[in-house]
Image 1: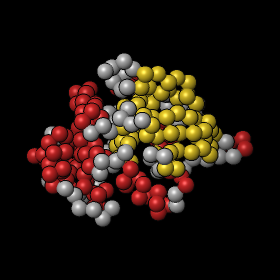
Image 2: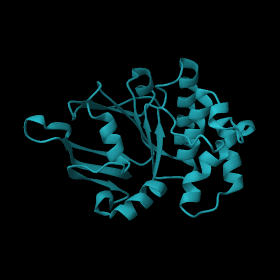
Image 3: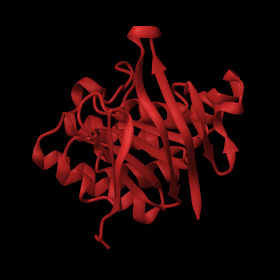
Length: 228
């Protein structure tokens, strides 16, 4: 079943001689429940693609559909609601609110949306993330790996249609990187979360169901991994 459809996506910066095509006519689909890695050299358009898929940035042209909904046909208010409810974003540098503890950071998107967190769901998620005993610690009191777990929890807590991760292991050592990938794979299996992971690490990419390679804003390779 198709969850996301990307049609002729283009993103251009600058004009005339200074024009740069970050994305150049990119098209592909993502089935529900797939774990997709997007790789490519620096400047290939990976992060630009991720930000457009998440509704954080608008394309110059082209369309993105999630559950048959034209994402950019929405006004800015509806697009903000879309980001809160339909997309979970995981960043390399966590983007946690320093004055909020782990639990507050995880539940923040739901509270901003005017909804009340489910304590049982929160406890189950904290247990899976292995940070239940750190739930009332501030980000400054957590290790890098623990902060990334909080970031993952924040993305997962609202049960969005798709999880978008921008270099989620790029700031971690090999041990923590392996543990974070196990968490993402566990969420992918148990909650049938569709995931798009931007990474420069081939070992991370090979743990995903599929790898798309971008170069100069174009898809140069799209292949399935035989990992299941």
